[in-house]
Image (tube, rainbow, N blue to C red):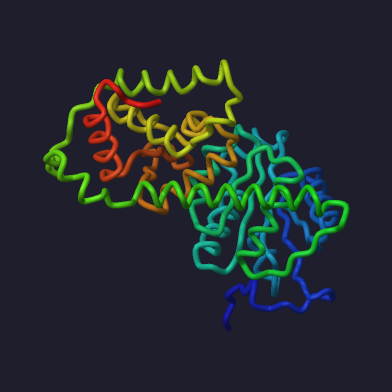
Length: 314
């Protein structure tokens, strides 16, 4: 008998939309997530994390999976929780296979452990999200899965604004990656002889750190959002760490990005998918991954600093 789970192909609920499945670490977190999802216009079906994989196997169809981990659940979720491990592994596998969209809402304390276990394209990790971020992320995730979307009028205006902000944010990520991957103008290459690809120019770690410090000083005089450039901030931080032979966990890289953690995670995933970052498992802790520059990105950063020299721009 075929025991495979079909989450998005069958749509036979009373209103034409399968429910959003909600798994929570506590009764309080499940109730809060269910209440919010239903107020936003979707149906929800909640159950404990213990036995969640078996519960999902019984579900003929679902719009997606929402896993809610509250602040009070952080200590328990950080321990060796086999049920949560099984659920995250299952959700990541199903998302990677294109069968289920998964969103996890969690406190900042859990960012490293969750980021290590969720790397599929159709997963979203929200850190301390507000209601608008929740609504917008779920709407975008279900839209990507070709699921019907409905919002109550009371939430339509702010949700629409956030949806536009998220759409703009995704557009900025795409534009930045396009610029990073653009081949230099051949005419510009004739000005001076290019450095052979096999040559790795030496770069001073102090030079890189000076640029990072200078970028942070701007926040003393202007709103930090004016200069938000998480891709460049993370590239700088990873280059400085590489020179110093330090390993960078996800939580540290999110801080270096100087944007909200959820936004930083989205950038990390996109930069990784596009081959600029690499994930490396912590050999001593399976619940943590380190982020590092891909060899091509490292070489590009080093050649950039070699070219601009002491005049490195902030």
